[in-house]
Amino acid sequence: MESNNGRETVVVLTGGARGIGYGLAEAFLARGCSVVISGRNGTTVAEAVRKLDAEAPGRAAGTVCDVRNYRDVRGLWDFAAARFGRVDIWINNAGIGQPQSEVDFLDPDLVGTIFATNCAGALYGCKVALAGMKAAGRGAVYNMEGLGSGGEIVRGMAAYGASKRALAYITDAAAREARGTGVIVGAIRPGMTATDLITAEYRGKPEEWARVRRIFNILSDTVQTISPWIADRVLRNRRNGARIVWLTGAKAAGRFLAAPFVRRSIYPDQLP
Image 1 (cartoon, helix red, strand yellow):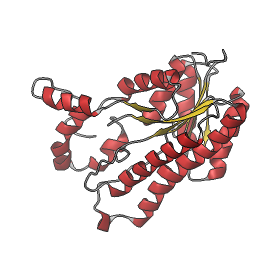
Image 2: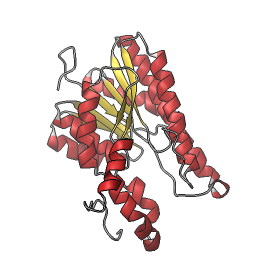
Image 3: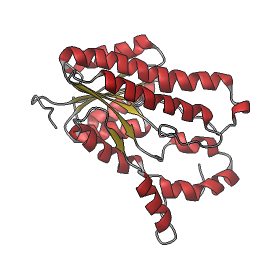
Image 4: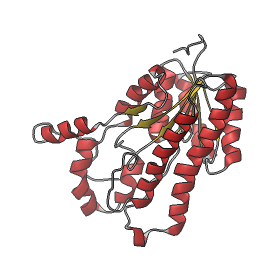
């Protein structure tokens, strides 16, 4: 895959060492891009890069980056630019979830971590990427939105949902400010993806898992299904302010209507 100026597209993913970030890294590499991933754990990042490099020798790189730290985010840009010469697409993918908890039972430390990662981390990414891309007169920045970004309210998800609602505002504000610069800002809404972010809170709770598994199977998709679809649309998009949405309301409604006739088995009956 080549960018508009005929050069290979360089994609940076925060939090790209596992989950949907890693899936997107694989998908972009499969489309001829060069990819830089990051994460807080150096061992995890190194192992992910090793596997990606085996798939696309010389086109995958990674470095340690805690998006809660602005200097780390700035360092990620510098690392990518030094390794591949520039950055064409920057995806603020790093984020953390929360176990379901009503507001009065929320862990204050976890609340701070959620907002520092999901909101401040994305703002730092937007700041760094927009500055570099505006100087070049081109580029694209995407925020990984999620539950709450569209105004959905789910019991027990106040902190996570609020952080993603704020992220939607960040996307819209940055897109407005990017008008006329040659840089576009957009969002990705992958829907419910079958990753540890979804299942972690249900491990060791078989009764709760049995209660939610049917709904999760209806609404969820695997990283391997979603990632190529998203990568194609990110590479094709030229519209500022675009939202790339996998699980639309119509698609979700269709799945519920089909559920009595079509059995989807995304998750195991029991979690390991």
